[in-house]
Image (tube, rainbow, N blue to C red):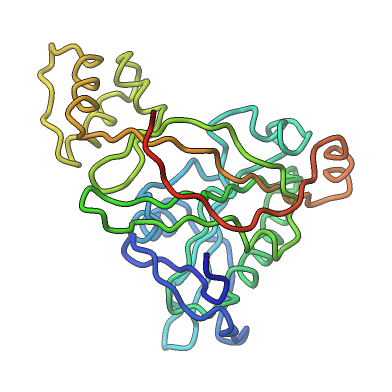
Length: 277
């Protein structure tokens, strides 16, 4: 990992800029934005995952050096997919915590843009959602490549969270991922919906079809269809060692609730993507 560069995003590809460049606060504004009309299109256009989480609050970073303010960054605080995430990593009831579901800055933003933006986004979170006392964030140390071997996402260990003095909780559980041809991970929840024909399974099927899979017939056994995508290599199995987990306690009550949880030394370098056994 290179510590003299800062990672940025544009058009769902990672970009890098010199970390030593410094943001000019007078050039930027930070404010709450509409999750659906502003945050979602920006995140889906630029973040490598191309998806938007179940947001509770979104905050935008605006470049105001031109005639009109231009959105150049988004932080989205979301509801975790698993209700146990907040209690496990903060010691608080689930409604009193959120996940930093997306943090996306364009490559026009200077090297210290993450800490400048995220610190102000957290202040707005406290103002807009006073019942939220803690934030959980994840850093994925594993790089991802598409079927042609092109790098889609470098791995990282969460240096921006370390710079903001977040508490390191250790690793999330290891798991096997199913990776699409473009290098994106097909979520385990979507897999379950398809295999069990749960509500929303049609949208999950559409995601795979859009990625190049042959659409199943209406009467096909979807469990067998999905297994075929794995057998043919359309979906690639990759073993993941678990994301790094960080927690931000926003109040004294949150710090007290987290006293019994681990506070571990910060991790350093990343981990290379390995094949599943």
